[in-house]
Structure formats: structure tokens, C-alpha cells
Image (cartoon, rainbow, N blue to C red; front, side, top):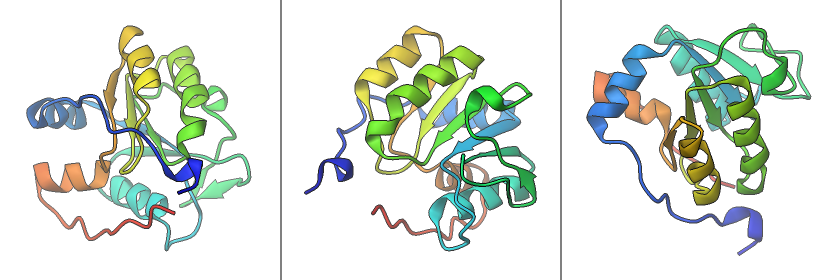
Length: 156
């Protein structure tokens, strides 16, 4: 297996009740690695979150707009407060994203299904952020609040 397709298992995640409270209390979610391809998981997850009333901010340096929203090259370029940084990038990209999330004052690091990075998770927790690893925010939201998860993952 190639290095970029492997990642460690998450060391821990908050309890379902804590995730429920978190999802009820946040409004702004920066999706790092958001694709403009409707077939990609990141696109479907972001669209779902928008439909559920969240303020989704695309982060992709190669795009100007995704899902009708201004796209930013990185977290530092976003002109508003970020609650959750939802990561759709390879495992090796996680450490600098977590560093940037800490620097911009995000509240939560959310590593999507198949992604975990224990060292970055520990660093984020030590900086006061909540961390969720290898878990789909759309699937969690749907499970907790009801709704169509309707997503399958292509973790290539």
C-alpha cells in the first residue's frame, strides 16, 4: 500500500452526545480540500452541511468558487471566525492544516472518514481544540439528527 493511503487509527473521539452538542453549537465550517466535482465526497458532504444551515467555507487554492461560495486558498485567508476545520486532504497534509487551524482560533479539527493523525490530534487538544478523527461529519449529523446520509466513500 502506498504511504499516502495509510493512516493510523484514531486514538479517541468524543462521545456521541458531545458531538451532538458540538454540531448544535457551531455555525461555520471550513472544508479543507473541497472539490468542485459533485461526485466527490467532499462536495457531497459540503452540500449536505449547507442544506442543514451551516455556513460552509470552501478551502481549495485551485478554485475561486465552489457551491456558489467564495473559495479561499488556506484557513488564514478566511475573513471570519471558523468553528470547525473539516479536513479532506491526505494524511501527510494534516499537520500544517492543524497548525493553521490553531493559529486562526478554530474550535474543532474534524478529520474525515479514513483520516487520523495522532500527533496532530494531540497538538490540537493541547491547544484547546476538540478533535474528531476518521469520522464523516455528514454521517454523524444524519445519525444524530436524522436525515439521509446517502454517501459512500471512495478513499483513493
